Structures are given as C-alpha cells and as structure tokens.
Image (tube, rainbow, N blue to C red; front, side, top):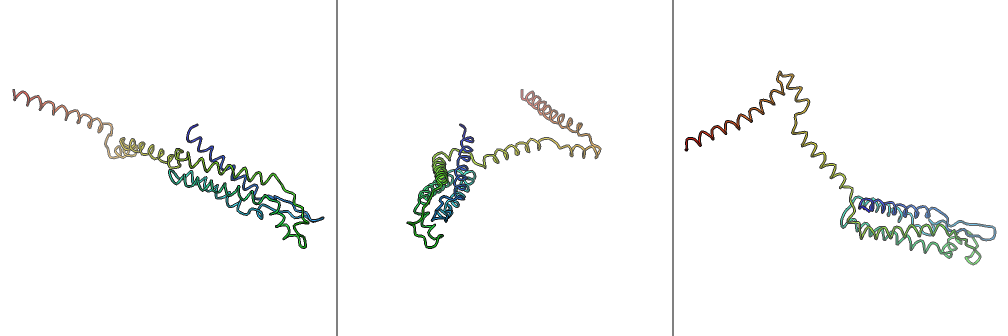
Length: 218
C-alpha cells in the first residue's frame, strides 16, 4: 500500500469512528419506567462530552492532513486521547445506576429503588466502537504519520510544473510580440535568420583571425 493510499484509508477510518460517536451521542441510551410512567434518558445527559470529543477528533483529522513531522504526531496523540475519553465516558454513561439517578430527577416522588431502567444496548456499543477506532487512528498517526504525504506536496509539484512552463515560454517570443513586429514593418522571420547568420559570421570571423595569427607566428 502506498503512503497516499494509507493516509486516505486512515482518514476514512477516523471519520467513520467520529461519525459513530456523533450518531450514538444523539440517541436515548435508557428508558426508565415507574409504574405507567416512562422517562427517556439520552446520551447527552449520561455522557455530555461525547459530542465535543467527536468534533475534536474530526478537527484532528483535518489537522493531520495540514501538518507534517512532529506536529502530525502531536495531533495524533490528541486524537488518541479523544478516543480514550469516548471509551471512558461510554463506560460511565452506559451504567444503569447513572440513568436511574437522572430519571429520579425527572419523575417526582420516585426513588431509584422504585425505578426500572431498560438499556438500549446498541448505542453505547456504537459509541464504544467509534472510540476504539479513534484510539487506534491516533496511535497509527503517531507511529506512522511522518511518512504520509501532506497537502503542501501537491501544491509544490504544481508550482514546480508551472515554473518550468514559465521558463520554457520565456525562451520563445510570444504571438503578440510577433504581430507587433509585423505592424512596425519588420519581418520577424528575417530578423531571426539575421541573428543566426550573425552568430555564424561572428564565429567564422573569429576562426579566420585565429588562422592568420597562427600563420604569422610561423
């Protein structure tokens, strides 16, 4: 796998991880019942830091593309920390006792012993998978990110190509210059031929002077 392909595979994996965390952070993780009453407990109340951690991870993905060297490793470390935080907050927010405490505040005159919490197992699991992808992505960026290409490489290649084309274009007369010469009554083709003949004549004259000088010395 080439370095560019490895970079974009990493970007896709980290984007998927952050997307999973954002998806789980917007869902209800528990449904608490008290007799005939029900109260939904969302992830925003159980683990409010999941959303900011996911957005920070997405920002780190962009920062890895824009940086190189040591800074890329630093950003990878930040992403790994975001993923570790997601795992910790998922573990804490996915506990039934946390949902019961929050539901007890929503249902007056109901103690935690009288409440029954039904978890939505899928969403904490989704958040955990996303956090694990972010931890692994951050570790990979720290260990192997230095060998990945950066955004500046593409612009450097384009700049060198345009500079070479500019130098090549500067060596030949432009079409506008040829038309201006014709308007002034000059024939640019004849002028170029005179230039070539002048060069040849100059070389020939130098050659003749050299031969005469050598004859005199003899």
